[in-house]
Length: 375
Image 1 (cartoon, one colour):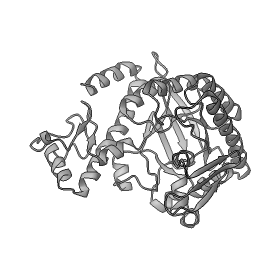
Image 2 (cartoon, rainbow, N blue to C red):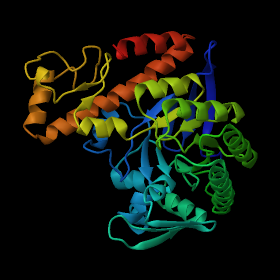
Image 3 (cartoon, rainbow, N blue to C red):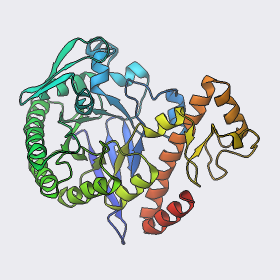
Image 4 (tube, rainbow, N blue to C red):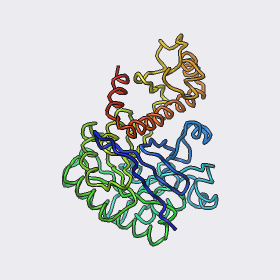
């Protein structure tokens, strides 16, 4: 049987490193660049799976840490995996839980063998090893699994970042060996995660070391943890030249439209972030002319579409005044419609970027989008 992932590079923009490609996965094809909605606990907050199909979400995320705690691997295995459990027939990518464990500062203890942590739900103690992170993701049945890694805190000294990065590499080797021993390579792909904080030599060492291990794809992690946008882009610029041209590249946890376009320009294919959904639940909405806060009083009598340039079900059906009313009335529908729009906006942006790459005009598209978006 063929491997779980096959990547085809279809085009590279003649004026930058932006790429368009296709991922063939067990549950379908994904065209890149792609923004992936985050469904941490087997659900993209406020939306149904039918909603996700409506906005053409080609792939969504789940999280090993959260799904391990609830509903638990036994239930997921009994259900036949997360796809059947949540009735989703398209690809799923799972994070290994490394970032979530990192965020439990004060509730975890990191050792070369793995991480002991306390559940944020009930305080129970658990121990994740690289092998256990793979086993959990095998129970989930995701199309793409991530290696267990340590997300280096920011800021970090060079010594601390180097130690963390090299431990992540040791764990990556263990993850790959366990993945192969479990004969999962034809069912699930595995990505290594580049770390190295804000240090060029460490990012390059990390990328090169992971390439030597030969993963089906590579992620760039340790960003969106407090660093500046300039430092985030530097991390991308330092890593991507050392990653294989014929394999996918995934920038973890990056979601603002401008950051997505800047990373696409530098050769990244895949993105995810909770920010579009979280912002939506707080009334902050993306439009082609920049973000707006639907809570502002000026929208109470605004009977125009949320974004006249958007073709999503929200913008073609409801007015800003109605969305403002829903928010002020505390209606649950406000959260759903806001989320539906923001995710459509991000998915559509990645599709537009792909079209521009295929036509050799990505930089022109990016410039025009940002000029209007930042007005």
